[in-house]
Length: 453
Image: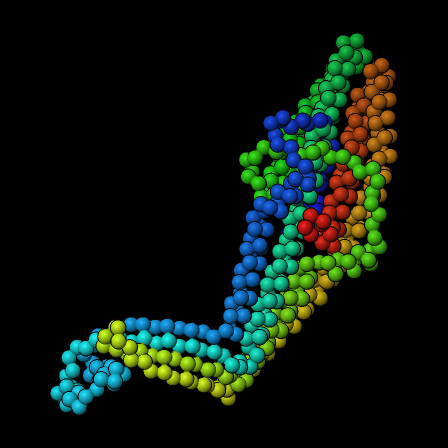
């Protein structure tokens, strides 16, 4: 997933908004607030539903690992129908029904077909496995904790994606307003030029230029509207909502006062402490260490106990039971180096995960610092854009008055309009950069309140 804003998208939005005015969505659309969009995504996002299922699956694996400490009881029941001499004689021996006639050569060599019922009830209990069962449980717990932390990180990512998609939709909505405003101004200039031409105070080429400019600006409106629809589709996608749903968003409002950011070093520390994917890395390392202990257990003594009761009968309702208890002690003396290699491989896997965690820590610190740099850039650009926008609006007003009086040429008016368009674009995009950078900082720090609920 990309956490950095797409610069090409901003450039495209810059172009659209640079020629732009007030788009009003259809009244039938379902207007949703940002909070509603986030709440919907947390409940219906297929990505979150998938990671939640993964957490539940890992929970069941813990139960499976813990079950290895308990005895295993198996029951078999069946029937043998055979004329095999050994099977027939063995069945009679197990049934305790052997007679001297059964040892007659003709009866032993040609017993004919016989049927026999059998049943086995076995109980197996591991007494000592060299630490394998405990290590299996530790591994299962670590894997479950890792999947849970990854699920929490995914929640933060989904909240970020919804916030970002909502922000881009708001920016696209503003771009439509700018496009329509610019179109209205261009239309006004066409009318003014026609009046001046009728009074012989301008030339025909200026009249054509005004019309061409109006057509070019008007042509941007469909592009801006398409950009807005695409932004809404992106929002519905990250929400997990049907793309055919008709929705609209709350218009973008400027924040009067920006919240004070903590020191960048404090932000880094908080990110390293709170990032759920970093916590997941710790759990992955713990799981790898448990696998090392599992591999080591293969070279240790294994102790087990097995008790069984067997039934053999030529009548399914008559039981002839045999009992047995088996205690086994086993140790592997030589495996061709396989056990040693498995232990070494497990240790190297733990080392690899530790190195990846270190790299991830550096990546997190970089994400925090890059977000701070973008926020500072956004604040600086907003200050400059605000001053430039005010001057550009004044300039257009003055030049427009002079043009209406026939005291300046059309090119001067269009140049001042272009300056205003650029100022509007810069104002919009600097706001977009600032708000998007704040979202990136929150994602870098895992600092979304909605994701912690």
